[in-house]
Image 1 (tube, rainbow, N blue to C red):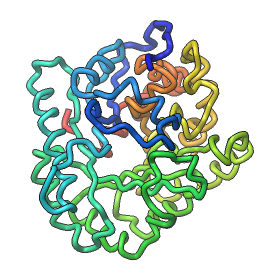
Image 2: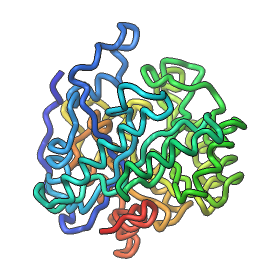
Image 3: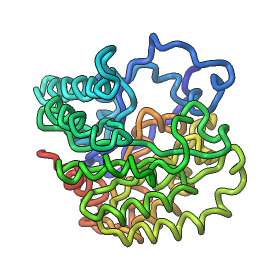
Image 4: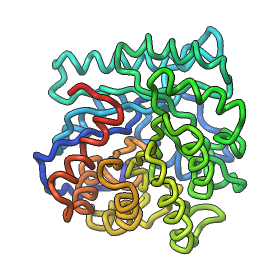
Length: 351
C-alpha cells in the first residue's frame, strides 16, 4: 500500500531547535506475514509502507525542514539477539541502536545526532533477576542507554490493540514487576510507560509508589476511539483529563505530547485521503496537548514524533508543523522546554 498523497507545507519556525524524544528503528522486510485475523488491523495498515525504517529513513524525515538537533530511540523489538538466554536477547536492540548512534555521531551523515539517547526493553517481571539485564544494557549502550520501557497496554476488547495484545491487565501493579522496577532508580534509569487511557490509574499508583524514579508517560496516555470505544472519545475526555491532572501531582512524571496520530485514538485524520493538513491535526490534538501542558507545565512536557508509527496520519514535517501551531501562543522559554529542553534534561543528553 502506498501512502496517500501529501501536500508539501511551508515549514513553520524552521530555526526552532527540536529534540525528538520518541522514534523507532526497524527492518521488517523479511518478517512473516501476520495471521489473517489481524492482517487488516489499522495499526498494521498504517505502518506497512515503513517495512524498513533505519538511519537513512530517519534522517530523511529529520532533514525534511525542521531543525532537529537530536533524537531518542524507544524500544520496538528490533534486532534482538537470535540466541542466548531469553531475558538477555533484548540487549541486542541496544547494541544495534548504539551502532546507529555511533554512525550519526561521526558527523558523516549530517548534524542531527540520531539516537543520542536509548530506551530499550528489559522484562521487569524478572523481579530482582532483571538487574544483570539492566547492567548489560548499560554496558552495551556506550554511554547512551537511559532507561527502559515495558508497555502495559491492555483492553478486554482485543479489537482495540489488535497485533499489540501482548500483556495481561495490571502489569504495573504486579508485585513481581515492582520488585524489578525498584532497580531503576539505583542504576539512574528512567521508565517509559505506555498504557491506554482507562489504565491511567495504574501509572498514577506506580508513580506514587516510586517517587525517586523518573517516569515518562508516552503518547499523552493514549485516548481511545476504536473498537468498543468508537464514538466515545469525546465523552471520555473528562475521565482522561482528571487522571492526567492527578498524575501530574507526582513530580517524578513527565509526559510526551504525541502519539495522537495512531489508530487507537481514531481521529478523522487517520489514514485520510488526501492527507490532513497540519491545521486539522492541530485542531484534533489541541485539547489533549493543551490539557497536559496546563497540568504538567512546559518543563515536564515534550513533543514527540512517534515515527514511523504516526505516519498513518501525516508526514514528519507536517507533524511538527501541527505541534508548532498548537504551541504558537507559548513564550520563547516555554517553546524551548516543549521542543527540546525537557527531552534533553529527562534523557540526560549531551548536545
